[in-house]
Length: 176
Figure 1 (cartoon, rainbow, N blue to C red):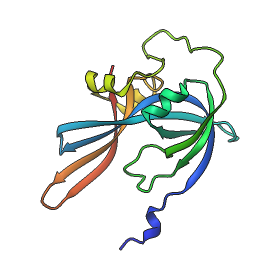
Figure 2 (cartoon, rainbow, N blue to C red):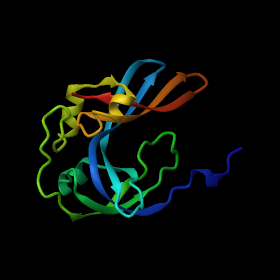
Figure 3 (spheres, rainbow, N blue to C red):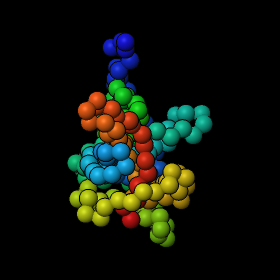
C-alpha cells in the first residue's frame, strides 16, 4: 500500500541559462499501435548557474508563456515551478512554471548552419501538422539536442483495457 506522501509536489525557485527549447508532448498508444500525440507546450532545458558543476534541468512552460517571454537559447531566466507528483510520467524536472523573468538576454540570435535547427520554436499547430517520427535516444542526446524539431515525450502505453494495465516511459521523436 502506498502512502500519500509518495506523491507530493513542492514549489521551488529555479534559475538557469537556456541551452535548448523543444516541444512538450504526451503520447498515448495501445501496445505499439495507434500512437496519438498531445502537444502541451514547451520544455526549456536550462543549465544551473549556481551549481559548482554544470547541472541541467528541465522546465515545462505553456505556449502562451513562450510567446510572451520570447525566450531563446543563452537567455538567463528565473522562475518557480512544481516538482512532478509522478516522476515516471513527467519528463520535466519542474512544471506549472510561474513568475518567469528574464535576467539577461542573449547578446544575439544563435547563428548555426542547420541541421540542427536552432531557432525560435514554431507554434504547436506546426508540430501537429508536420507529425513525428521516432528518433533514437542517442541521437536526441547528441546532435539533435538543441534542435527545435526534436523532443522527448511522456509516453503512456495501454497494455490491457480490461484490467487497466499501463506502462510509462520516455521516447524521443523528431518533427523535422
